[in-house]
Amino acid sequence: MQAMLPVIDIKASTLGQQPEAAVLVIYTGGTVGMSFNKRGELAPMRFDQIRKRMPELRQLNMRISVLSLPEPIDSSNVTPGAWLQIAALIAEHYPHYDGFVVLHGTDTMAYSAAALSYLLENLGKPVVFTGAQVPMGRIRTDARRNLITALEIAAARHPRAGTVRVPEVCIFFSDVLIRGNRAKKVESQHFNAFKSENYPPLARAGIQLEYNDNLIRLLPGARLHAHSRLEEGVAILKLFPGIPERVLRAVLELDGMRGCVIETYGSGNAPTAPWFLRALRDAHDRGVYLLNVSQCEEGRVIQGQYETSAQFAELGIIGGEDITTEAAITKLMFVLGLNNDVQTTTRLLAADLRGEISLGQPTSGSLRF
Image (tube, rainbow, N blue to C red):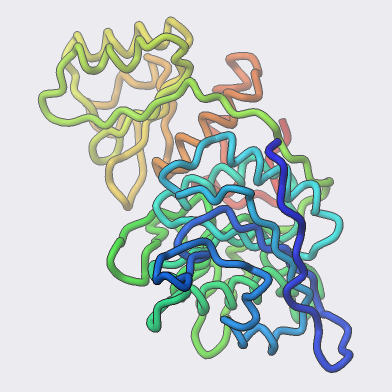
């Protein structure tokens, strides 16, 4: 693992109060952690000076610590290695904090949140991803609001049960809290950057934070386990009318290809041309796992509903239900990284592991492997 910068305590309780919670902020990069230096250039912010930039922190009765990656990563450069590093950091500091906030660039935040949801098995504390569309140094920044609310969510406890309020990986942005593996970035010019089309928000931020407790995953019955391997021999193939056979085979026949997310039409439909089906069968026979995901933002894959998807199950293609592409590709990386047998791998790819598909809410923190 890359050598880390030291943990910086930036906020403790005031007036001699005992902190109600301890939250670790992990800064990976992105607009949310940028501010203007003396030359008027955007540069990573010094978090030991954040209290000057965010006086609102003084009103939070919690201990806040910050851990920054030595070299901030633009979210366009995020790799599976970075996801493994973040998961390992959370596992390392897990006993010492009540919740975690991950500051991250918006472009690939949905991929990162989905990946962390799989890697952190039996997660029993909040891991809240957030970021900003406008840097901290601008007057109309959304960074302050997003960070303050993410901290509140990471520290929140249920008023009646006294337990952790949101024990899962999620994204807070603008005014909604979304399950991490249900999120999709849909906006680059406005503040409401993320949506979850097939699952309601876990909470909304208005005058108060309003939680939908019945939609939030339950506390796990086992200890946290941070997985340490992801399979990178995967790809996404988006179908389009007139896709040539050479393009399809160029992707499916790549050296080291182990899995492919196929973005199909509507409820999981695809061409019925013999060459197309033959290419899929050849890939399956070579041991490539194929996950069928709809190009539509809403709805779900229903293999066999139409003739144009009737042969998919016979070909060994796995229906992705209502999973997002971001959650599907990271799920492939995770499940294939477990190196199970074909039957177990197929079962896990079709199953609801962390609430990423609508097959009913699990009663515990994860499906055991």
